Length: 346
Image (tube, rainbow, N blue to C red; front, top):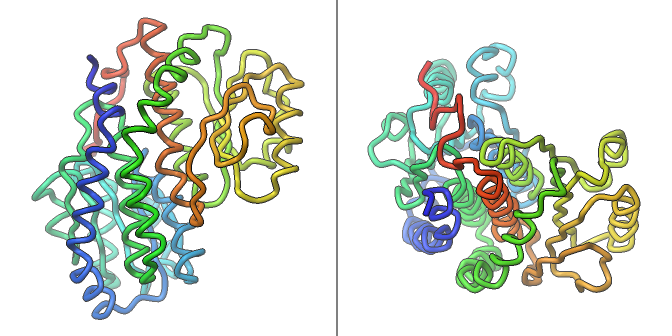
């Protein structure tokens, strides 16, 4: 078994520990919120970490009702003066697999040195460099991916951001739904692995478009990145209805479209699926809706969560698994993408 397969298929075991860890840290997180005043939240990360940050930005906006931003750590490091008004009086949240990526470390150091901002790090390694910089360090080493491409780690980071914001917001319903989602995860993976394996082994599709809205858009961009890194095929990510504004011209009978269905605007989504299928693309949908009514080729059913963001946890498994099965079917080693390193030291 490749490491990538093990990490994808074992992610709910790690998510169980991450949920329990955050619940045990709740008093410390609540005390941090009382003692550290901030006017906004700024999520910074690199690569897959930045994709997760984009979802965190939206979660903070819609759940806390405060300004929030996601900035690639390399962008912030290179163009720090440009972001002065954003960084001043913000709370930095820095998810990092290694805790030693140069762009993240340098950006956090400068923000703390020049503006004295507070920082929460979420790291998949213990005792890392970011751990010593952060005012609150949350360590989830059981989520660490040994393979180059991140899968289990990003799913846990996505859940960690939701848990952190849920604790800040004192949103017990959100926290309960995350727990319910994690508890259902093993059955969910068992129910859909073979279906996804069959789609992944289909040689008809040669490129991928991943569609999602709101909190799921960031994690969907990570799903698109997984196809590039793991399966080495072209991929992109867009908001649902925005795909009509230009990207639709590149969708054809060689395209696989993966769509995270919104709980709202059902008829518009049915129309979008029909338009995509007219272009000859294969459509895989993920959502609470009735499979027969959507009109997609394959539907992956998830529970009906009141908090739409929770759906991002089961959703990301779909592109991860498809990318892995596609790589294996093409004779590609998913653990060792050429030209990529697990993390970057400048």
